[in-house]
Image (cartoon, rainbow, N blue to C red):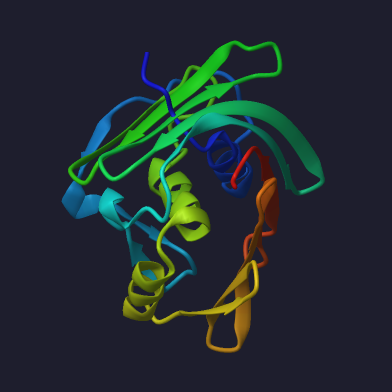
Length: 192
């Protein structure tokens, strides 16, 4: 079974897109040339290679997400290193509800719970903004007309003067707020 990390991002993405339906199945792999996400309506962020991970991760994470007044709680097993990003998403009862796998060549996401309209590129992009090397992220953001400011344990990502993302990362939790799309999620784990 593929261990897929960053369950929170998948859940958050579902919230972000307003997809809380439980009847569709998502499946498929995408090639590298299509691996990007729009962080704003005009900012096309090209996903970074897995070698740009800040620190390898292989652990369970508790995820709480909020979007549009709705809250969701999940567990994910996340494995991220210089070769792959994998997430296994579990509901509160421990049932597998989705799997994501990203390498520099392919991206795949499968789920019997999340609708086909959920785009895994956005899950990976949010994960990268939280955990990838700050120099690489800053370069990728500059390429799409955005910039990042770092203050202590907080990353703030702007489009011009508009704050789009605010990410706080400490040894026990990572909290991502997307001010533009109106969603927040918190990942709890051992991030030391």
